[in-house]
Structure formats: C-alpha cells, structure tokens
Length: 409
Image 1 (tube, rainbow, N blue to C red):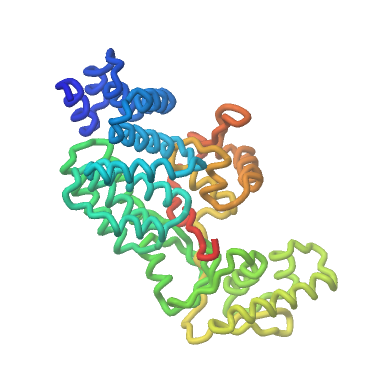
Image 2 (image 1 turned 180 degrees about the horizontal axis):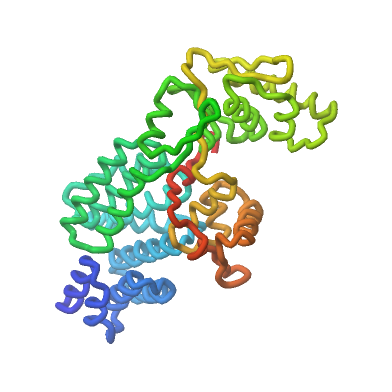
C-alpha cells in the first residue's frame, strides 16, 4: 500500500475526512475509491459514498477478498446510518466471516459492531447482548472501544439497568478521550444526559411525579405492583405478566391501578377501555368477560373484585400499586422516539423496527405530520420521514420508548 493511501486511512481513523480526501480525491484506483467513499460517508454524503464503495468493490480483483469485504462492511454502515433496515444483514455477516478468516481482527470487530447496531435498531436486545458478550474489546483501537461501550450502554438502557448504563458510559467516555475524536466525545456526553433527565411518570394514589432513569429501575425492583405502560406489563419483582398483545386487558389493569385503592365505576371503565359513550348491555357483558380473563392472568399478583358501583384491584403481598407512565402520552410517541435520532426513516424501516405493519406506521405518521411533529422528504418509494426541527423532540428523552422484541416475537 502506497504512502498516500496509508496517510488517508490514518486520517479517516482519526475522524479527519477532509484530510483523507486531500490525499485521494483525484485517484480512481480501488483503494482510493474505497477511502473516498468512507470519507464522503463521514461528511454526510451517503448516496455518493455508497456509489463509490460499490465501484471500489467491483474494481478489486478476485484475490482481494479482504478489500471487498471491507467495502461491504462500510456500505452496511452507510445503510444503518440512512436507516435502511430492510436490507438483510447476511452480506455483512459473510463479510465479517471473510475478515475473520484472513486475520483482520479490527475490521471483523467493526463488522460485528454493525450487526449489533442492526439488532438494537430492530429491537432484538437479547441477541445484541449475546453478540456483544462474545466480543473481546481489549486490544481494539480506542474509538472502537468507545463504540463497543456505547452499544453496551444501549443494551443496558433498553433493559432498564441504570447501574450498568452508567458503568458503560463511563468506560465509553474514557475510551473516547483516548481516541481524541470530537464527534465521539460529543456522542458520549450526549448519552450521559439520559441519566439525569426525566424519562417517565409515576402515578400512585392519584399523585403524579417525574422519574429519572435510575428511579425507574428502583420502582421496577421494588415490592410494589407495577403496571408498566412502556412494556404493557403488570409486574412485581421478577413476576411479569405480558399484556402487550392484549390492549383491552392492559387498559382495564391500568385504569384500576390508577384509581387504587379506590374502585372504578363500570361506566368509567366502559368509556375509557371500550370508548362507549352510551354503554349498553352488550358492553357490560363484554366487560365481565374481559374482567374474567384479566383475573385469571393476574391471579398470582392480585385479585380483581366487584364492588357496588364497579371493580377494584387488590394486590397480593405488595405495599402499593403504581403506574409507570410515559413522560409524553400518546401511542404515536413510539414512532416519534425513533425519528428523534435525527435520521430520516422509511416507513418500511420503521415498521421493521417496531414489529408492526407499514399501514400502522403510516397512520401514526399521518397523525404526527398533522400535528407538525414530523415531516417527509421525497415522494412515493423514496419518501423518508424525520422529526420536525421546530416542533420535534426538544427536551424529549425517548429511551424507554425504543423497541424491544417480546419473547413471543
């Protein structure tokens, strides 16, 4: 490898994209094309970067499998940056296998980190955690070590583990300081702010207060019966009842929990859960049926009993009943949370990340667009969505809204 290529590669590893371009901007050999592509990606020109990397991969000869694999990994990183999640990660996995087989440990680790990012963006947190645990970050360059710890922090955040989150962020900050890359330092400092910002609301005995990330973990680990509006679960300690696929049952549980220790009139339950403004006998029958289903599911945690005017919740061996609610209400905030990363998303990638249909995502985007919270770019299949810079996510911290695949998914 000649001196200009080496110098350009060193500049890129230090985050100096312009310095790299000065050395290879006028060259068209495969190595220069690949470095130009990576530099353009660092500068935000993703379309041009992808084109250059593909051209470089085609130009490398049949004996240059490692160089082609590096181009594939770089293109996969661009796909993640542009939120092209629909593309299968199979090509990235094949590239990683090639790099590992040829002893390119650093680039193989980078490819593995890209796979972990894809898993996190699509909500496969347990798989991402296993992939991270299988990696040995020792010996990696400081910048990659910082990325490794930021990925570990993302896993801890989605698992609601405040202690592990702080530890990972502290290690990420130390690695970023060693790397001396301003953008990486800014990313770690931005992540640190999550620890102290309000991320949820605690509703208990009709009182409402904001919670930090660490306080959320404390609530979930307490002896209280917690109705979790983030994961749509009812839990006490390690006993968890999943109601994400049972929205009516979760609506009943949340309504009863918010009123605890008092009961809830039947008319109030029918209006909130079923939207029945004028309840009739069929509504009341359905309420009794759904109440029976919920009573069986929560038998280990609480009793549901009828009162003179409605129904009440009585927990087993729990000091109190609390509701862990979203800091910002509304089902569409889950879509808004994904868009808050500042990137532009397609509806297909949003649907994949949320584990829902494109039609559901389109309805949510329509509601958010009407409220001025999101905006679209392009048209037809090229249309992308992002949070509005004016009315978007100012002061909004979305960590608990990020997708986590349920065990049944």
